[in-house]
Length: 565
Image 1 (cartoon, rainbow, N blue to C red):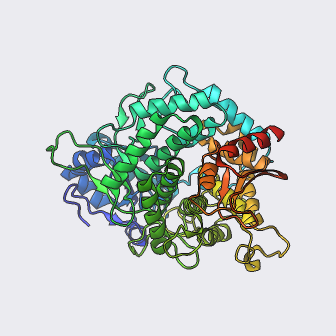
Image 2 (cartoon, rainbow, N blue to C red):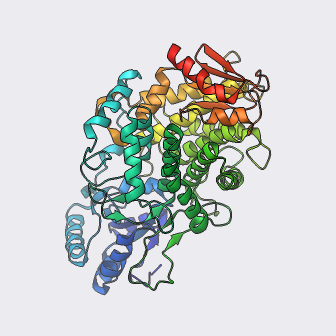
């Protein structure tokens, strides 16, 4: 397809352009872009829009444009450190060279250089990035040294002048904030306050993606669904721990932004680009209203947290609508999740990130909304279990590490990539699923065809898979920093029993709502728990239990149990 903005004859990602490059003996030019990326559009206009550059690209290369939101596995393999990413590779997908933004002069130099290298070395000029070589992950024991190390990193990397962690560009790091809420609360709440001032859009709501300056100045003003969802949850959890109602303002304002600007009728779209200062006031920023499975699951999870702590009906309503869409339009009868739901023939499926986030959203739904969370009437745990089973069966390797997706596809997609952040997300979701299944054990939850051992406790398979996923990286615990602090959270859960509150009453009763508001965002709450009488909440941590029959006494029961642990 020829893009009128660029004059480049772009191909769609797929086998055809790589086959074309092989037949024509040409390198492939990958342009990794996103709807929300201003620099991508600038490069279209300034570089690819230059007729002589476009002619050189068309004559000497096979140009392929990739939307990184639609194809996250391509993004992770070819990302050059930001977007746009400009990548030259061989017909087999190996990387020759790459850069981010290239202006006209820089692009002319690179085109000439790559053409010379290709003429001299051909396919031998390409290389496979180290992360894709298939080397084993650094396995080790899962013990309390992991949590201790990452907790120490909070202090070591803390910016005591401007808040946040690190001394360069400031990313909001919502999972790091959640880790710090239990271990360094002052750092967490101070960072939330700064983010609310620097990255939150007071005019229309929503959070910007990150700030260029160490002091949180020069924000990049694109708003991406998954980043906004993660921050809504972080702010809601900050309110849970502190009771500071000012933390609810950005969370509730972002909920309104998502509903007003990204709702597409059945789910949330992926992003909103920054305002164009050169455009007329009536011109709306670019929006991508494509619904992506993982980002929508995160949005449902975050809105459920907000509803659980505040009884906010709009958050509950939209979470339920997203959950219904995910279950009906994204998850097939075998538990395979599609990345998008528009029927695109080559749309990615069975991505680790999507499966992890869908399981997480469904387990949160079971805790907040109960067994009636899905409009179909199906128990969310049944759907979560199907989705988790497919991930374990198809993406988990014998050593416990999870791949980011099936080892198939052109380019470098057939090479295994085992992302640490993906391991954290799937392990956390599997631990919640395990705890819920253990508390709600029944004929369906103990389906022997899945667990394979009639004597195995319900959910044990999922806890084992979570442990293996974290153990696969534990040999490198001393090299894991605050950017992946969630690894410390999940490792901590694996080294001591979860706090579980089993409530006899159905979801929405006073004692259930009180259980959701116990100041521990990692606690697992089970409404309508089998074997628990109405009006009773049983608090468990391992073999230790306490009971409460009054909502106002529940926090005391949790505190007593914690002091005995």
